[in-house]
Image (cartoon, rainbow, N blue to C red; front, side, top):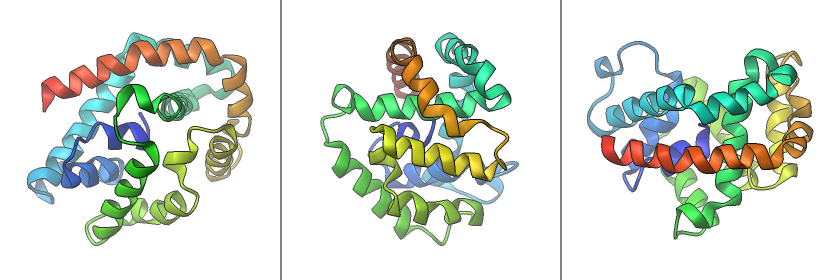
Length: 191
């Protein structure tokens, strides 16, 4: 899963949200550096990623697009799934998506001192381009994918990710709609 899903699955705890957001940049044993709910957020992120990578629907989605993106298929599917979450937000939250994304940006910005540098560099772009809200539309999604394609020195093929999504929209949407409620249940049982 990508940023929006990780934020959504953090519940109402802003420290878990921060830990979940920065988890990819935390290497090794996080308990050596982080405590309490920040640590819980990092561990939650890792469990979400493990569950996601092993889930049959996520595997099916990756297989569907593998010819286009190769080893980057998992990353592309994670962002596709954030698109479907944003698009179908009302099915998963009573809070308006705009309000939720503004809360996420505010909480992350308040804790810049503890966020690792790699993740800290992403945050201004995420906020200024409003990634979390713009995952819902193709233009915003295209901007995210083109930025990622540049960061991979144009070897990922992600500049074509929106067109591939459009070509496989219903299949990928069905995979997501099966997968995400199961992920939510997994997280609820874990917390």
